[in-house]
Amino acid sequence: MEIGIDSFASAMYGDNNTLSSVDAMEQLLQRIEFADQVGLDVFGIGEHHKKEFLDSATAVILSAAAARTKNIRLASAVSVLSAADPVRVYQSFATLDLVSKGRAEIVVGRGSSIEAYPLFGYNLNDYDALFSEKLDLLLQIRDNEFVTWEGKFRPAIHNLPVYPRAIQEKLPIWLGVGGTPESFVRAGSLGLPLMVAIIGGQTHRFKPLIDLYRQAGQAAGYKPEELKVGLHSPGYIGTTTENAIADYYPGYAELWTKLGRERGWPPVTKDKFDGLIDDLGVLIVGSPERAAEKILRHSEALGGVDRFTFQMDNAGLTHKQLMSAIELIGTKLIPLIKKG
Image (cartoon, rainbow, N blue to C red; front, side, top):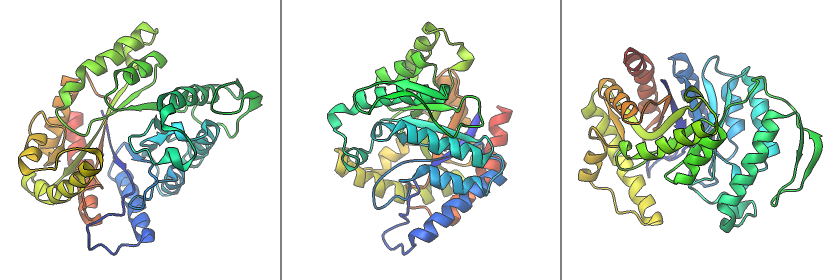
């Protein structure tokens, strides 16, 4: 199983934070560089268009990271494909693939944060139709140097080449999904690796949806080993479980209560948090030993997981705390995962 981190390039380190955007970006690049040094497999950068996040130009950040790293794979997490031009998305990540010497990946999705749609002039009523059409074009560009394509939301392309081409023969394109069954079926039918964002409740409840993905993939003629499954969940690693909870809970409660007011969720309570960090809950918060045990338990419950990525920098944690967690993931947790 591959282990990594997804970041939204958050500049929020508490209400009293005076960190500049320049310093926040430098610290993020330091974390990616350190993650490479201690043996993490992948680092993903999200896409938002909000004041508190610095990740609107995902491929630019990843290219800067590529120049400072050697082995770690560099991915989007996710690229909001519905509000983007697939030609430019491919070109940006093919360029990243050149800079990184073959370490680029794209995770595409419709986006749970919807600010990109009005910003780029798209109608939310076309939420799924936009994604379906643009995914089709992106896959055609990935698989063909010369493209002929016609759709509803973008001008047609008539036998035109798209450059540069990625180093990797088949640039990895994952489908990022939430809880919509049709999204799981779509990923399976296309034979695309699946990245499931699970941010609440109990992880094992996604088993029927992942089964749908695998069934759709096999029905479309793909081999089981071609149908990769990844999980993205909030979490944090401390030297002990008690230390991890003490570091993580205050910022997590603050952020998710704020998000709850925007999206209609109930406020976070300590009892609810305790349920999310128990054996079946989604949050991976604890010591390396407890976290490894829980990740392996989740993998078994879901029929096998190929990649797990932590979302850590959205809970008011400091750069020092995040660096410590990265070190523990690389030196303690990953060896435990590999041992099984």
